[in-house]
Image (cartoon, rainbow, N blue to C red; front, side):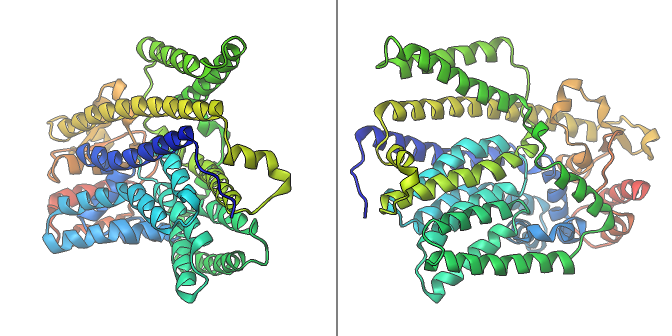
Length: 480
């Protein structure tokens, strides 16, 4: 086996990456629960569905290909509401399980990783620190897919060639596949890394067979559990725009790319006359430029765009996973002649490379911290405004009922936090399930519930007041 002792600088960078990955994973749970982020975006409708114990009928029967997230988060939360009779117990449980996923994923990766120095775990921490803050807060199923990808990668490479090992790999692959349709890209990436061990190797053959089983199950789910016609059209439109380059034209992406580019340019320029200090000087300069930008020019909030950057996880996660697997196999002595330079960079990085890597991590960390802080502050203000409007005496009968009120009554500065299709459900929850008014975005053009589903749920015996469910029924029947 190829083995070299790590240099002190490499050890420091490794510790930094692990610290940031685990640190973010813990912060995700604390920040989410403290700020009710389980209610943001689509989470408001998911949480309401948990509260009225109708998650599958409300939406998840439409997305059978994401059943793993339903089974691991929403179904247990719904069952908890049934046991306790307390809607808030289920909503909080849903948020806790959803947002703890990255931390659990890292723990499982550490347990499954048998590479020298647990390189896969280190890369998993790096991926968590770099990518997850970009979508933190929006309940996209890719959040779960990212968390499951890393232990799945580790198991695929290092699970024992036994029946028990094969079962573990199959379970992991099925869970990953049924997080999100984009997880197919992640599974193909894992199989690609296994191919580097040899197309006749046991791990590759096991992976190929597992993929065949998973694809069969995924197709069967689509055939036997098809979506409603209303949602099917929306799903096709979303799928067609999933990889649209326009999705990346958001402030946080521009900031990240600009900061990294500025660091590279300054580093190269300084290196010509003082290579020893170029790394630190460039880092200080970039932080100075970012500070000027944040104080004097930055007024954007990375909010709704968090949903669209799930595409970034589909693209970047397999790239980092591939690098992680290559690094691990390089240390195992699996030699790829055509990748000699890359092997050298992986196994014996220079001091300058390590400093540059640490600096880029620091820059990305700072940008993520600032954007997350702004998002949470904005969300807090928006949440309070929606709650106040739901309990006010204001009304807009032109929306279809004297018990409806338009979200356009809010300050325009808060519009950046709005997710139009779930505002009614958010207003219900924030009013502790007894709103005076149902808050509605008059420009909304997507409606989650059919009249039939809302009527059936209204007539059930539940902890959520019947008059509140009647508001949902009226709203749903006006549009579907």
